[in-house]
Length: 279
Length: 279
Image: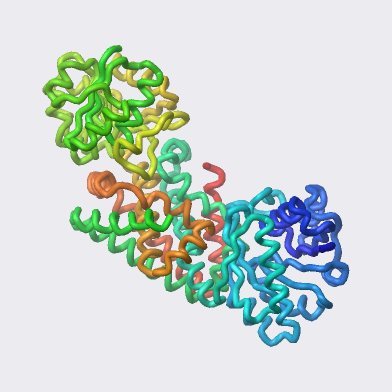
């Protein structure tokens, strides 16, 4: 294929540009971003070859990637579909119900493929874009049955070429599982950072003690506010359910420690240790 | 120096043996462990040169390292001091109040140096021992004022030689900070594992989605039940305080998401992002 438009030149959009270019999947990269600092930086970094307005970018492309925060993706998706000729549109958002709902009655629905590459870092913006981000990661295609078969195959091929293993899921199943596996991980990390920063005003103590597990567990707390507020909001029902379960487990632990019931504490740790069988 | 006894041949005791041998700080290593699987494995792995009963080991050594879970260390410390001739005893436990209390009236108190190397992995037992574990990590010496000055200097030198940066703290301050920086990290990780494992019975979904932050955040949930139950119990008061603060922060997040107050959610995330300034 020839030309690709990437809408949203942050961590994911920028890293996709790098991987797609490295594998020669497209030979011309057009960038779209409402933030002019991002567009100029993306050109400087060589992530994209040129910057255009949305309409021009789409009409000059063979393939369109929507890589903006999920709340914005939901509002843009149907308008972008309206502007398509023969191009395929994919999104790369961390929640899927909202965007699938937004496009479901669009006459060009079959030109859209909903995807979620399970890759990222705690950094954001064009400067956060890195090589090989999608290598050895899962890429999930959701509700593929509502997309044109050939387009799904093409998207699967693209993800495979940049090193990802493609999995298929229903959008609803994706959002429940993502809340339980990914979104709560971020929330637990944000809460951890807040707790430590509120209490421990001696920054040197934090740095000194950080190698005792804090550093790795708090890493995700550096993640971007716009990206993650949008994800929690878009996946609100599932996120609230998992938060309730999480808080219940923490309270269970607390009561076991408080009552000095060491056997219950050990049992809870042993149950948590079962994660070894999965990862 | 010549001969060292290491009591407790798990992750920390075994890794210390490797680092101390690599830097030729001692030339003969005697192992003591109530678990005969651990002693035979430690000899097989070359962590120690021979295994002895506690009394013999001490009387044949120039230096003694206590590397058992903190609850056991607290019960053993004073008895070990009683058995010392001129040797120095150090412990390496993750909590300090209990052991400092246990030895405070011992006539040989000044031969004891309380330390906490801030290093570890989620694995346990002699097979978990690794090279260079203490390299570039902090090693904390607590209540040094109650130990003989020359012995403190010697212990500082040993930690420096195996690559650690030595810091001094009061035992009480250590235990508060450790609860806030290290112990809660483990608890948040255990609670995360329990939440995900209880809900997501589809193991493939967990594996597929794990790169979305779960894998790194849940790593500590693989940690040993005996080690960590003992730490939570020994540092109960501080741990319960930090758990309450943690649960409050998680509930604050939950209410902000539930009420759809995106500005509060973003503010909480921005406050959590401040951890970037520290780490």
